[in-house]
Image 1 (tube, rainbow, N blue to C red):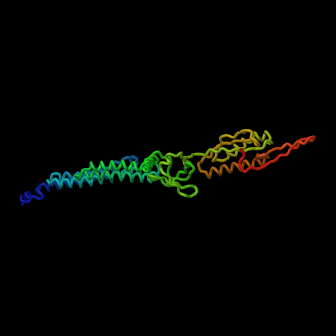
Image 2 (image 1 turned 90 degrees about the horizontal axis):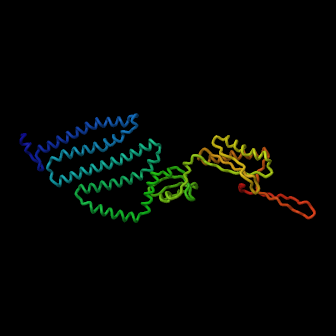
Image 3 (image 1 turned 90 degrees about the vertical axis):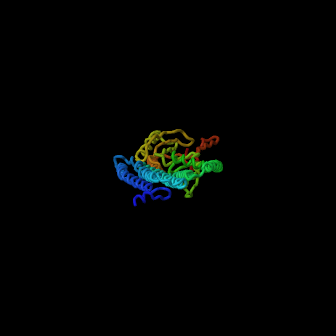
Length: 368
């Protein structure tokens, strides 16, 4: 009976060959399962241990998502390699194994890229980076699947040299026809890696200003102050001179006031210290300087420089308003007059003393 079974052949292979293949497959699966349970648990514990800082998570993911599936595929291939299956069957099986391996490899690479991005965003606190990288991951995914498809065609016996040559020629033609799109794509990488601005930043470029709402592969969406959405190509933004106010740490403020020429000398000397005290009393302002700048056509000019210790425009205006009100109040209390454009006419009549007539007029603009 046993001799009959051992002499039995199926598809050109004796029963002993199938038995050997089965034993090899079972043994390989058991060894891989043992390795996964022992080494896999150790790698997982190290990747989750606080003292390692998660440095072992790449090794754990690579072992679980790449090495173990490939070992299973290798075990199957070793088990069936001792069987005489014919050229056609062997080629089909080799193609199927290559297809499974390619799918596992591409999915593992994409998973590791996505996991790496998530880890980086969690470690740096830049959650917006994960959103910005999604188009980049989609592009990488498309390229990897195309490469995997060409690899599978080669394993199934197709001549891919003509296909690769056609793709190359087509790629050149597409590149020439889509220079603008490829330029925007390249500048997307420039924006992603160089970081001239990020989501939520308030920027000014040319005569446009607004907050960054979305960064895409071809365009950047900007929400203007007036409410509409500006759609600007990546190339235009990269080539423009961009003012990024979100990264401003403090605001430098320069303002000038003018007083009349009739102001007494002692009051003129006291004005810079008076303004300095008003600025230093505000915890959000840092005084730099205040000087009697010069003699104007109708005013004695004072120039003051200070810093607002926040980039917030509303806070800057609140600080400037408080300082202006204090200056106005102090000048009114001390009888110091603000200057405004005036002219003095001297009328001379023969035989009489010259008469003086001062003509004053207001100007809505600030005195210079």
